[in-house]
Image 1 (cartoon, rainbow, N blue to C red):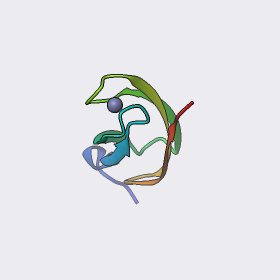
Image 2 (image 1 turned 45 degrees about the vertical axis):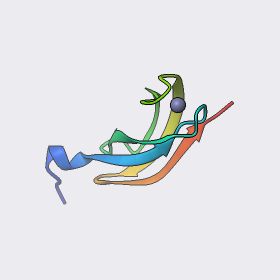
Image 3 (image 1 turned 120 degrees about the horizontal axis):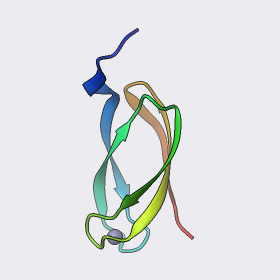
Image 4 (image 1 turned 60 degrees about the vertical axis):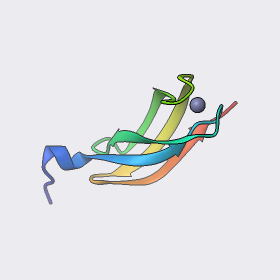
Length: 66
Ligand SMILES: [Zn+2]
């Protein structure tokens, strides 16, 4: 099965470990396992997110909080 490029990106709600606010993160699901750093849209602090994907959907998403 082939999925068109733009469908490989999905947005998932995540919660900031610092301020607790939820916002949407755009994830490229063409990578099965990824670790990315994102900035919170609300408090602008950077944090790490680990994502497990299959093409077109996110299977698991974990926010790394120290
Ligand atoms: Zn925040």
